[in-house]
Image 1 (cartoon, rainbow, N blue to C red):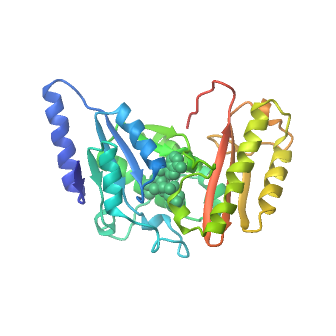
Image 2 (tube, rainbow, N blue to C red):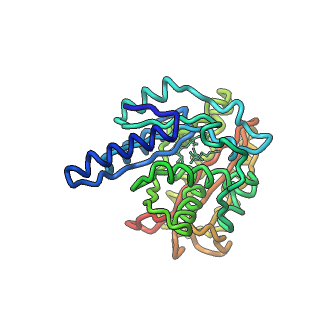
Length: 301
Ligand SMILES: Nc1ncnc2c1ncn2[C@@H]1O[C@H](COP(=O)(O)OP(=O)(O)OP(=O)(O)O)[C@@H](O)[C@H]1O
Ligand SMILES: CC(C)(CO)[C@@H](O)C(=O)[O-]
Ligand code: BAL
């Protein structure tokens, strides 16, 4: 496994790998998995999917300062390079890209990529400018690596939709592959930020997946619950947990994120429905969601 800290070195490596393959009249597919590190089994699942689909797998690890707000956790975001490299090696990654902030942003960023509309709701409303930072860094990574496929987790469902929109609007030649949420055995979605939680907060955090999954199994079992009723039930369940402070609970169509009418019976919705929430436990903000779809329907971003 190769580790690159400079853009120039990574591009040179990819060029050589592609020239070598071209001699055998092959064009190797490249899969990119962008992350902020402190890797867990959620990240591993993206790497496994990338390994299945591609000849070359590139993992990027970069805690991107421009997607954090001034009062957010950029400085204390968890980092563990040795552990990350061991997980990457275990998953058969070919190249890890670990740039410094100066390498990615040698000048104050005069140029940003902004996706309008989709970024104004949900996490975009709570974290102004966040998605401009995400699309700018992902745009740069896509240009640097030129992957065939790029992999994003559905835990960040809005992020996957925003990136897919950017790729479509700006004609990036890449397939965006959404991957399912990986959860702990008690239902809590894996997240690097879970390390911030005290034992009591970690216990309380179970309310998120428990209430989302209750809704999902009800809808899948054919219950006629409306979007308005679902929103009320979810909000009440979370408010009943004293440690939890709701940032938002929303029910929208996916991937366009347009609101679902309160009177819509969820099991009859024409398009997939995203039930998404962001909830604070102390200073730690967690997100989680479920996507309600018709049986056998495939997820598109
Ligand atoms: N539990 C999970 N299941 C599937 N994918 C995940 C999971 N957690 C993170 N990912 C995906 O991994 C990629 C990198 O995410 P990131 O490094 O921010 O990890 P994270 O655990 O979500 O961290 P954070 O705690 O900052 O939200 C994103 O595409 C994200 O959606
Ligand atoms: C996609 C990403 C790596 C961009 O910094 C980040 O937002 C994340 O880890 O989900
Ligand atoms: N996984 C999303 C990155 C962030 O919260 O900044």
